[in-house]
Image 1 (cartoon, helix red, strand yellow):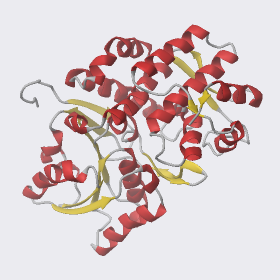
Image 2 (tube, helix red, strand yellow):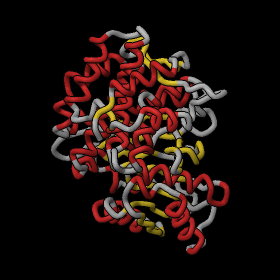
Image 3 (cartoon, one colour):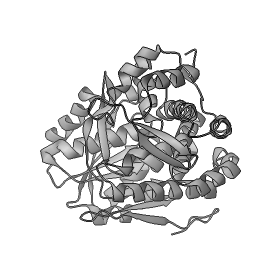
Length: 371
């Protein structure tokens, strides 16, 4: 497949899980290609979950071709925002599925960003003990991270993504044209997750990002397609090796323990996820420097890239005790010990519980600013 103007071949990756592999398609114009969806439907009936921002832009362009192909489409439009990633909103999905007598073989489709994808996947995992679902991510962050790998969840007032399930999609369809309507702030937030892959395991990709960041910010189609594909390749490799996060997959949480504390402590939606992850990654880098694992020049290199991407390099000045308390709810805590993703060097991250609490507190204080 190629589009007019900027010709772009569809990239297809496979998350090759042993018993349920699934493809990730990446290209422009995929929303309207119902033929990519049809082979994955058990019955000609789908429920599309989206939100009030995405629906006016992309619901009909996506749903229309499905209807023309003979598929019954049920529309579920949720309110927009991280603060709605909760039980009442999740229950509103179940309300529609039950009212419309959806069966276990009906396919649930997530059309939106990370919040929509996480909630739709969790609903699919729960409804009648499991129904098929498809991810159609419309933000950069969701295309490079949350739509791939099967993590689904809702938030709790005490912690982000604390209630959920591992539940893999049947298909991921990333239409890069949807990024044309993404606000600049959301695009920058997505770049935090793109940069993450270079920092934890792919130094050549990090070098590429340093040389091509302005192209990504200018939404160059070729640069975006490459960055999304390379990010998904990295995530797929990690997920295949460790689906349920018993080892290597925890590296994908670079900056997330600090970042989730920011999101929870400030109130969901006050900081975008990618913004919190950037600030959290800088806290991890500072802690790694304090431990003698990386140098000040390494910290400065990471900081420069985040600043060029329009991302914060300091978190809000919440009390350090608040950070530490919220971080204890992190899913990587084992036997009461806080395990953090830290740098042994730029391009190689590790999960470690070696950092003393006083050092963690010092890194937070060093990388906090007025909210």
